[in-house]
Image 1 (cartoon, rainbow, N blue to C red):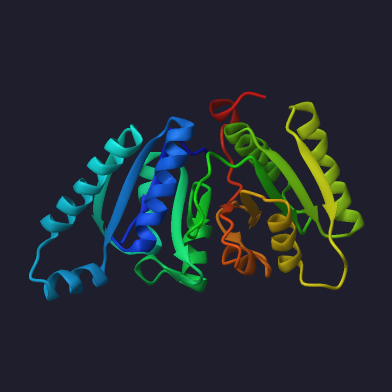
Image 2 (image 1 turned 30 degrees about the horizontal axis):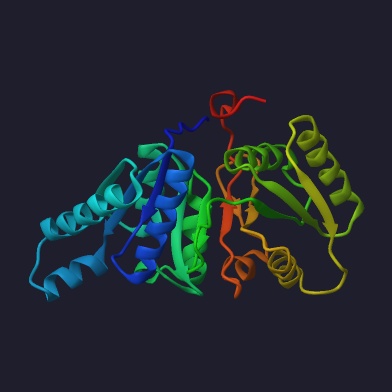
Amino acid sequence: MTENMNNVVLVPTDFTIVGENAISQAAEAAKFLQYKVVILHVIDKNTKAQLKKDSLDKVSVKGKLQDIVEEVKKNYGIDAEGIAQEGSIFTTISDVAKDVGANLLYLGTHGKVGIQHLTGSYALKVVTSSPAPVIVVQKRSFNEGYGHIVLPITSDSGPWEKTKWAAHIARQFNSEIHIYQMDGEHIDEAVQQITDFFGKNEVKYTIKIAQKNTNFAKQVIDYATSNNADLVMIMTDPDQSFKRFILGSWDEQMIFNGSQIPVMCINPRKFNWQKIVSY
């Protein structure tokens, strides 16, 4: 199965400061990439309870969303659209991402406190169900792109899809990929495949091998922080059918890192790569 991409950045919001920050970063990325930004509010049971409390109806949600859209258009000079849709954040976000053909999805969080109570394992559920890469952001600003991306490699599973995705993102943002790998013979083989592909396709990269018997997630974030990385890229591991994706044991620590480095989470789905980027 192939997914369609329409040069769209999707960002959910619950009209909080966390949501506002995610919108700002999504809009900055959309401007950098010359994409459209779609701002989504999921009208779930929490929204309905708040509307009832404030004696408002669903029309007020659409009005508030449209105000944000107009502000984004004015401030960033990009195409923008607002969508208010009833549902659950756990399914509606991914459904809308498919409907609009999103290339990227921005998810706002502050530590483990996210939009519409989207915290911890719940946030990870949204991440692993997304058809597009998800960038989990905190308060740190976009800073004109992701010039330096740290790519942790913890297993030898699915290296081909992971490699193409990493190269695709690197080309979008003109990035240098810093591979940070666990030590191990099988992982060495996977990294060799990745670097061979990077070399053939002129993707800049470096390699660093982690220390043994220490907290890998902490090592990754320390390495990213000391090298002024703009992004950490995590690859989930797909099952054989590519219908389910799993985050590793270290990933949650990296996603909610104290350095507030944005983390891109990618589910390596099967795409028509010729339509996305030419190699």
